[in-house]
Length: 341
Image 1: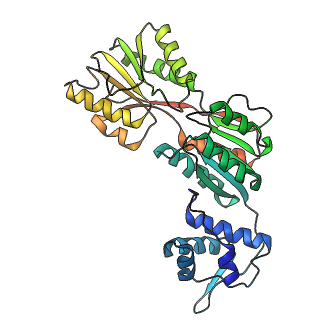
Image 2: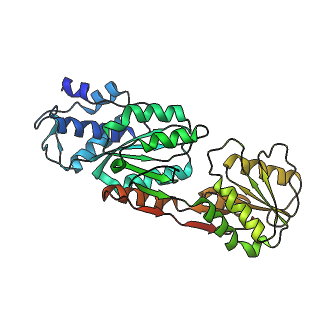
Image 3: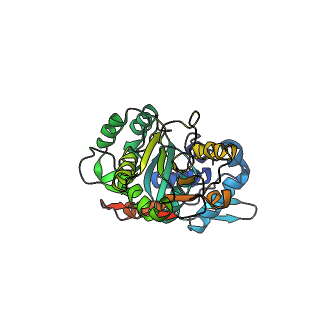
């Protein structure tokens, strides 16, 4: 039993839920022969103490192992290994640039679609190339698949070059097609330029009430500049005055303008400025917000959103992984019209 306590580890830097890390550690211990049939597992209290985690976390992991038919419990004796034969889960390194509400939707759909067929180790690199480089160099060789959301605030080209060094049979890009990646690899992505152009076309009737379109695009951002290309192409084709606003703090909002925001903090500032100016949103000014979230259904009687289908993105990425596919799948963009426009 003491040996098992040494085998099983929790990585405090991983975003993977601790109960999954515990399951994956036990499965890897069985696979390596360090944990054998009839071995008694530590009690829930022992694991909870040693791993410094909640009893409910250990209990959830044990219940899942019991459901898989690998572990049984006997009153007064504890938990023990009853089978060592199981379908080996694919080891997956999942690298997200950041955490957000919509990224959680992606992760939940990805993990649910994979089920027990993959063991996910999940890390966040915060759009930082150096953090990304360290994670990749330390970990990528230990995984059968590497799924990456490739967004960087700086050193974008270096990030792409580093990604291009990954064996293509294990690489899947999610959310964005990074430029210059060679070979056959899987990808589930957004077409940033075409998505915003077609979304604005779908909203053209409502937009005709306004004379100017403004997009709030922070100067130092990981967002693709192809969004600006699509925005400017729409404004030119449909003859709208337009402006790219890098910072709202010193920007005076204008009557008759539609504001498109990418970042949630900017939406808050924009609404505050509209209220301060006594502008009626949906009449004096319009608001279009990137990325659908539940709260946007409620704020100010509803905020119009343009958004990728994040659930589909997670599901399709998992399907590529399970089928070992190198297909490139574009995820559709959805427009949800509400009272803010």
